Image (cartoon, rainbow, N blue to C red):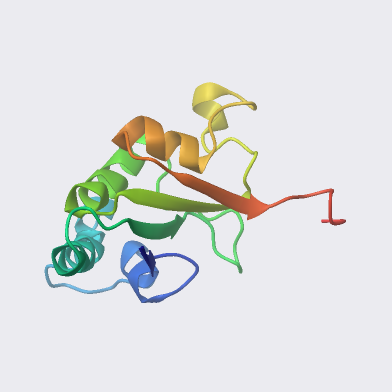
Length: 141
């Protein structure tokens, strides 16, 4: 398998965020869909190199180590615009990192016990997902 790191400030992640992606070419833009073009092209190139049967994972996150409240997608619709092109390009398994993996990603939509980031990614794209995050309480967090 191969995993691309598209979270936590790494290069792919920098393209997703409007604050770090100030480009005025085809890799920039006002929307998350526009700013995801670079990642989709990287994923497609990797998919072409490894073939269709090889597991390809893309690590993603909405939060930043310096800003736990940061969100790339503020609604499920925005999240779909971000993730669907990446899955279509060949990221067969979104690896969803969030600070509190048991917490709801959009509590305003499905409540305090709603889906986490991986749950929404699966619902929106149909892809198999990986959920990871800090387990608070168990380690004194």
